[in-house]
Amino acid sequence: MKVTRWGAAVWTVGTAALIAALPWAAKSRLPDRLATHWSFDGSAPDGSMPLWAACVFPALIWLVLCAGVEVARWRAGRDARAVTRPWAVAVLPTVGIVIAGTQAAVVRANLDRTDWHQARLSVGWVVASVAAALLAGIGGWLVSTRQRPVGPASAGQDGQGPALELPEGERVVWFSRTTNPWLYLLAAVTGLVAVAALVALSGGLAGPSAWALFASCALASLTAAGCASVQARVSEHGLEVSFGPLGWPVRRWTPDAVESARAENRTPTQAGGWGYRFSGLGTTVMLRAGECLVIRARGRRTDFALSVDDAERGAALLNALRARQAR
Image 1 (cartoon, helix red, strand yellow):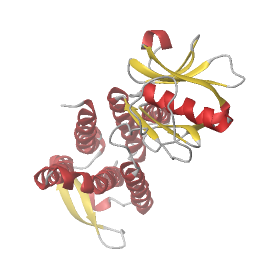
Image 2 (cartoon, rainbow, N blue to C red):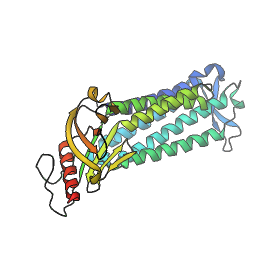
Image 3 (cartoon, helix red, strand yellow):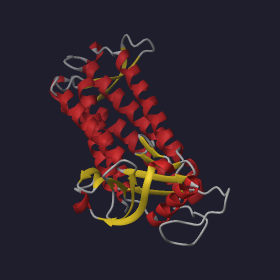
Image 4 (cartoon, rainbow, N blue to C red):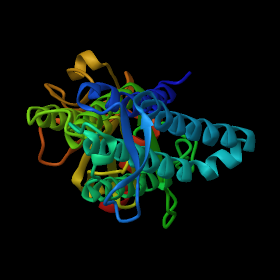
């Protein structure tokens, strides 16, 4: 199984565990039965469940939904999976956050009550959960529908070397993308911990110190996700390097801003580790050992390198574009 699938599995199972653990973690402060359903105006509860059911049922709903979506996509075939992936990536985080947020609101409503009839639902928490879910769904849709090349695109010639011979007026482009699935797994794990801390805070199960855990894990998750993938594009506009699942931030160099371009093999030891690294070699975006596209910008004494496939062709095209513009 691929590491990225492990990341999805960690997020799915971790979300289910969080949903189930919320009422159980506060069982000493909850009545024997929990109010789980309210009248339309939310003023008084009109339905309840025992503690075990309040733990298990929402988690089961989440797991059954995830399993159903995955089974339906696999039975539909490879082409249909590619088409339906944006919907799955958008819908599942939305539903997961709604269920987790609602569970936190239920626990908060029953906290320190002696009878479930006394529980009062905070509509604000429910609204906040729905708003967060919509934002997660929009983010998932943007990530999954962002254009990704299926492989390095040809520069139009088979020659290898420092530069390509480009017919005058011909437009060319080169793409390459590298992903480090272990960094995405780290982003999923730390993101889950951040969500757990936030849900515990909203459910009244954690003190103000949990904000530090939430902030540090959220920052770690965003940083890991932002450093987990890189995409390079060489065209008549020069070199464009974008980072992370949303393709942001972006660094750009026009052809005349590049002094030289080459391919070079580098290792994490040489670069100083994984991710966005600074060393005596300059700046290296190191996501896997091996071939790197290395450029030297005009006026700089150090290089910028990124680990992408087919780096020699990208360097050759960039040099050819630089030479064409200089003529």
